[in-house]
Every structure is written in C-alpha cells, then in structure tokens.
Length: 430
Length: 116
Image 1 (cartoon, chains in turn blue, green):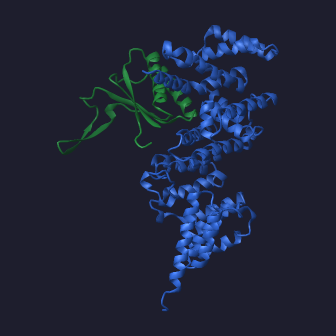
Image 2 (cartoon, rainbow over the protein chains, first blue to last red):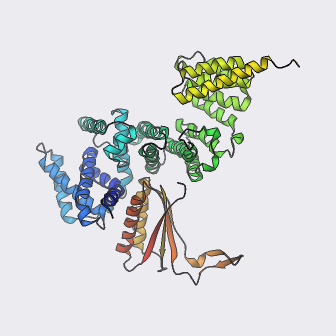
Image 3 (cartoon, helix red, strand yellow):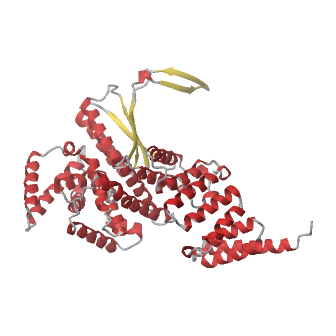
C-alpha cells in the first residue's frame, strides 16, 4: 500500500464514522459547532497516528476516545467555565473511566441528533452559502478544500464562511437548537432549499471538469435520503428526493463525447438509470401518500416523472405536464413557469395555443433579458410557417444568449428561418 | 458509487440474537446516514430453488443443494463515495460478526454496480 492509499483508507474510515462521531459529541456537549470541530480534530489525529499503527479494528471507538479527550481538554481550558460545562466535564470524566459502549445510549437519538444537526446547519439566520458549506461539512463530512473546489471559490473563503457561521450560531445561542414539531415543517423549507441549491450546483457543472462538482449531486441526494429517513412524515422531503433522483437518473445521457450538453428530448434513454428512476418514483409516491402531491418539489418531480416514464419522446404525456405547470403557477406565480407551460401546451395542443400564452408573457419585465422567451416564440412561429417572424424572434434571442454555444445555435435557427422564408416566397401558386 | 454486499458462509446457521440486533442497529444507522439503500437476510437454502442451464438444457433443482459449500446469507446495497468507503463499511459490518458470533467464518464480498 502506498502512502496515498493509506491516506485514502484513513479518510474513508473516518468518513464512515463521521455521522456517529458528530452526533454523539453534539449530544454530549450540547454544542453542534464544537462537536464539528472535535470531529475534525479526530481526523487529524487519525492522519497522524494510523499510518504507523494501521487503521484500528474499531476505528469508531478510537476516534470517539480521541475526540472525548480533546473535548475534556477544551472544557478545562475554557476559563469562563459555565456551570453546565463543569457538569458536562464531570459527566465525561466518569464516562471516560467506564469506557461505555457508545452505541447503546444513542440508538433512539441518532435520528433526532441528525435532525438537530441539519436544522442547525441550515438555520435561516445564516447566509445561504454558509448554510450549504456547513451542511456539506457536518452531514456529508466534506473537507474545506472539497467544498471550495465544488463551489469554485478559494478554500479561505469557505473557511471564513464556516467560522463566521459558527460564531453567529454560538452568539445567538443557536449552537444546540431543537426544532419543535410545529416549527419543523416551517424550518424544513429552509433545509430543503439548501439541499436543492447544492444539487443544482452539481447538476449544472459540466462533466469532465473537476469530478467534485458533479459529486455535489450525490451529496445532495444523500442529504435528501437522510431527511426522508429522519423526517419520514414530511411530504416535501420525499418530493425533493424524488426530484433529485429523477433528474440525476439522466446523468449518463446528458453530455456527448465532446462534453457538450444534449437536450432531454434528444437523449439516448437507454442510458437513463432505471434504478434511480424507480427510487425517484417511489419517493414521489410516498409524497402523494402523505398528501403532498401539490407541493412545490412534488410537482416539479411529477413533471420530471412524466419524462422518465416515456419510453420515447413521442410517448411523453405533454397535457399532463402542462397541467402540473398550471398547478405550480398557483404556488409560485413565475413567468418562467408559465413559459414552460406554454412549451408543454405547444407539444400537446399545437403551436397556435402556445403562442397565445407566449404573447401574453411578452410584456413581463422579469423576462426582458431572458433569451428563452424569443427562442420559444421563434420555434412556435417556425412551426406555424410564419418564417419571417420566426427569423426576427431567433435573432432577438441570439442577441440575448448567455454564451457562445447558445448564441450560435440560435443564429443557425435564424438563418434556417430566413432560408425557409425565401423559398416559401418562390413556391409556385397552388 | 453503488455497491452490493453479499455475505456468504459455510456455517449455515442463523445469526445469534445479539448479532441480529447489532446488525439491525447498524442498518438503521446507515439508512439514517443516507448511505444504505436496501438490505435483506435470505431464508435457508432448503426453502429455495435453482434454475440451471447445463449442456444446453434448462432444469429446476429444489433446495437444499448438496454441492453448495458457501451459502449466501444476506445482501445490502449502499451508495458510497468510493471503494475505500465501501471497504471501511464492510469491515465494520464483519467486525460485528467477529465480536458477536465467535467461531463464525464467512465472506462479505463487495461489488460495484455496473454503469453507476
């Protein structure tokens, strides 16, 4: 085994134990931030010692003992020792002597502790980027470097974000927060938002780049699974998991050999991961069983499910998709959702019906700089044989495009429409 | 990465109650950590059957299967970052067997899913 192999093995052994470490310490110290710090300390200790001694038979026990020792040191060093700390320190010394089997005390609490962790990390008081970093750190065990690479920011930025977030948590007394029953559903949306943000960050990343970026999807999926396991009665947790699983199922089909994105309707469906689709469908069903069919994430998942169920693009139930978009519009009145609805209506009922919706959107200020509006309009006009207008629309879209690839694609469609306009001028009268 | 763990043993007996409880606890923890996707213990060979192809012929054989030395006891499916994590996780699982069913011998084979 090379030094690199040993290093990887140590990291892996630590990552497997990390959730139990952090939850046990958080319970003991009643401080999530401190627990996280000690978990990291334990990793450093392992990296120092295990290359020489080998990975112990029970890595969990070794790491826990080390972390507890550090915790005691920390508590003793703290000159402003509050009574609670004294009590905790005494408790821990007694425990230390008894060398308890960690598992037994925590069995029923692990779900609760993970819940506390994830809710603390995603507290609405913290800025959103900080929540994402903290969640990835505490739930998924990612290092500062890994988080930094994933979000394409310097490691120092992430380190600062985490430090500031922890300070905010301790200063506002939120270092050990228990989300209560009623608050839970409310606070849950803040958690789901963070998880979805992480997923989208990974989803948008091009493959072939740093593997760590698409890896964010896996971490988000994992957090989604954690949430459905520890908050099983929350329909939107299942809805979000469904949405992520169903989107992730297309990973192998989304890019071509050159790394260029392939549109959903053009993808090779044989490459869609059926295992993930099944998991996504099951999660969506669970959301429905819990009465959450009309939820924000559940509706988006339902739309993606329509695609996942279709064996070929022609089998897509576009009317159903359009209905789901209409339902979404009732929750979030967004012109972008309406635009998507128009596309679905265009496929289900024809270009004329879709155009009526699009023209209604043309005045919306939100869509002024959005290239997809004139792009969709151009496509509909082309299908109706209104080539001159289609050309103008595609040219307007090309001007608004975000990058060269999009621009070139739209410019090509404009040229195509121009050619079609000319040839239709010269077709013989019937 | 998706992994399947397959546990085989030449000792055909069921797990001790202590081992069963410990495995259940571990499974619960791994599910809550979002890492274990599925798991199951399998009923004895005597209740199973095999459909075989040999010499171009398909045949059905009811359990128990005389020739079988290693019997599959159970399986689990995990979603983990890499093979190192899979090994660490499998070691922890097998350590339970070592601690709670002394004398037991067997194998936990871990295999990556194709395409995942």
